[in-house]
Image (cartoon, rainbow over all chains, first blue to last red):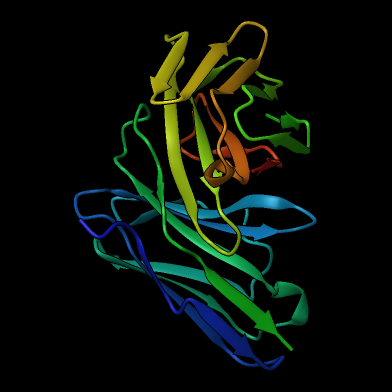
Amino acid sequence: DAGVIQSPRHEVTEMGQEVTLRCKPISGHNSLFWYRQTMMRGLELLIYFNNNVPIDDSGMPEDRFSAKMPNASFSTLKIQPSEPRDSAVYFCASSLSRTNTEAFFGQGTRLTVV
Amino acid sequence: KQEVTQIPAALSVPEGENLVLNCSFTDSAIYNLQWFRQDPGKGLTSLLLIQSSQREQTSGRLNASLDKSSGRSTLYIAASQPGDSATYLCAVRPRGFQKLVFGTGTRLLVSP
């Protein structure tokens, strides 16, 4: 398996534009997580899905952020409209939904909003 | 609320030294603890996973221990090499949740 695949790797956009980040989890994994990493706050969970259903979105900072998982092999995180303070590295991770299993992370998307 | 702390924040050692990275967490009700490595500009690579019922896990030159009752874990790196230079993160999975709660990491530099 190629691991968790995220795209794009880098995104530079202007304030006010819509940004869509994409993630393909490891095949067979039924839990998917979106994290954000910043220097100030470290790694924070934004939202996670079990079997394509959002379970906990309490980490989503504002209504400008939304996430979907239309099927077991694809998820998106959308920011609309984007703001400079959204600049961060966004990671997607996946695991089996059993609590004793490892989480595997993608390479991340570095987002810069200017 | 579970909080995870890593000490030291940064560590610089000469090649060949054995070293210990520390991780502490405030709530012992966890399913497991996972150690990750992050290279600059890269994603997180899983190093070791310790279940709450286990005391330690080993992989090559790495050994991670877990003392759940005291809320502590250590990552021991034997015979460090320049290629070990990276940021090391620990994360716990609190009981009742599937998410991971991360520490702020220890930035390790191993000099040749």
